[in-house]
Image (cartoon, one colour):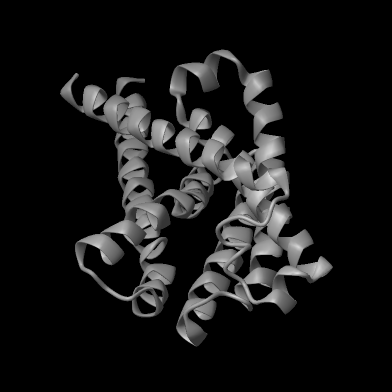
Length: 218
């Protein structure tokens, strides 16, 4: 019971953070030169290709962040399989496009080569884990699909953790942005992926124990 309560609290917190950051991110769809756009060099923010990639990445990435967390609510997933599948299709399509666009704009990330590589690696792994999750569900391999979706949403959640680390480094540690950003480019997703992998392996052990117990009972 205690474990279920902790899991419920953590899932709720994850969804609340995800929804908040997603809704905040949607403000970029006003197509006004705000924040990240206004800070770019004139030749970048005036580029149609960069703007297209940016809006695709932000818009569809925010959509994936918004809807993805609800897919982990067991009761909602099990009782409304039709909704789960429809939302899942939207999520997977959104991540494919957003990841590809993210790889394109990673080349123009602030913070030098370290930041560019950090965001490029994130985009590639985000795309790859999404592909593995999609391939697994096409084969009706639910266990593998769930494992890859956990990893994938851990990477999607980088949109949240980046925005948590950034003020901590800038205001808390009083680091210059140009020093902090390359670190956060990696810190925003590497720990997420580690936590996701821990959850996947823990789930695998639990599933194995359950299967053994079921066979013994039979």
